Image (cartoon, rainbow over all chains, first blue to last red; front, side, top):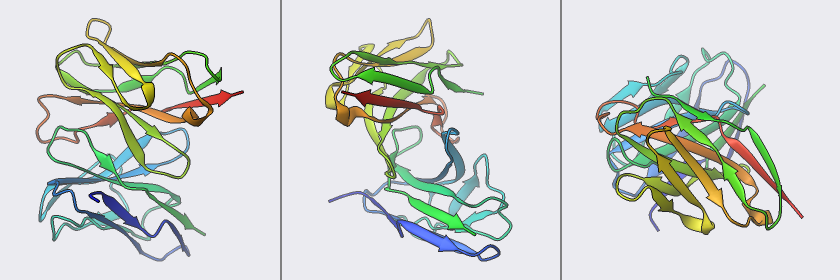
Amino acid sequence: DGGITQSPKYLFRKEGQNVTLSCEQNLNHDAMYWYRQDPGQGLRLIYYSQIVNDFQKGDIAEGYSVSREKKESFPLTVTSAQKNPTAFYLCASSIAVPSEQYFGPGTRLTVT
Amino acid sequence: AQSVTQLDSQVPVFEEAPVELRCNYSSSVSVYLFWYVQYPNQGLQLLLKYLSGSTLVKGINGFEAEFNKSQTSFHLRKPSVHISDTAEYFCAVSDVANQAGTALIFGKGTTLSVSS
């Protein structure tokens, strides 16, 4: 089955540690996205990539980094510079821009 | 810049009642419009989309939405809801001409709570 996988589902880290969230898609989509979701705030765009080896900052990129070395993969690193990293993180992909996006199941990150 | 307003943050309804979730967007340029549903601790699932053509769009699970260009609205409706429709619903918009931007702008969501 085609789709987007995110791992792990739940992630716990200590403050000051960097952590990498995985996102893989087998839909052959060119564009991939990372969103952060907090209660009552909807989805906020962190980074997006329209093509391999290229990515752009979204609305809340500070404290995050990404790479896009393969079409199928778009990992997100939450660095220790992110002041409030505890949140639900969603990865998405789309065949083109603009177009509907397809979402993974999400990773809930808790930093204490 | 484009923005999306979902007018109700919470909508409580009884089972088998009709429901309307309201969505307005800010810019009257040509747009694509979407509704997504999110169940607790899951990703978003596409309910329906408007790209062009008929202004009445039918989606999955018995939902439909009507695109109203003059009112810049895209309200979601269902004639009879079930307990299983309890979830959060997101409206999203994209400018058709936006080839290098972020593609989708999301509203803050509406929580639909269906009780018996």
